[in-house]
Length: 292
Figure (cartoon, helix red, strand yellow):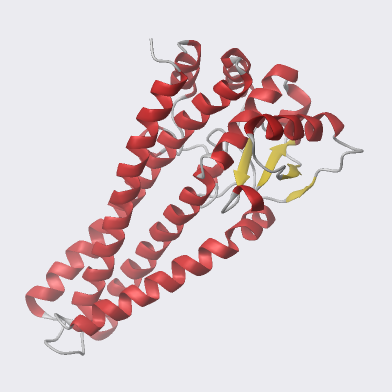
């Protein structure tokens, strides 16, 4: 039977491998776009890499406020949600991380998420449906899960992954549009037509699909890791397992969740499941928790 530490070590290794794959696909997309637009001219790749770095950096630093705004989150006042704020505060001390800002989302679904590029700049948000439905042990389990995301820098990793996947989609769209508008890409040295353009086209057609699948796999691994870390923090896996069972019964679909924010949530906030789900099956998460 795997313990907390076995599960956490396994999921960390898998996450690093998947993150490296996302980065590799991103570089491949930049190279493919460069081949279409500039042929074998190194200048095209350098220009594409600079654009990629700038895009990812801007997305990375602006993500927190955008995600909270998109989600309709509002600050949780201690006068209105004393139990929630006290729970997060107590677990933050136990986890050894700064107290994050606490937000609520007015939605009957049972869900929550954490954002932040570092523990010092982190925020956690909980739906009103979750706050009103879960008992103390269950709420502590969910809060511990979200604080584990912060402590493990999962929110940072997810933000970077989403930014790279978004960049790949933009490059793919621009490359395809250039084919339609100009008949072929490329104005630079060596041209972008012919064999090089075909290679570039194949890359930018496959890259969005591959990056999305890898991002989803990465998200699932980080959820398993946060489950194990949260159970370690509370020393009561049953609280988190019970919360997941209530979520499955009541529903986790959040009205204002989007594909860009879905991977940040505690449970899948969208209706899409299977291999295209941002989260592992709830039954499998419960099984792993009760096996710890």
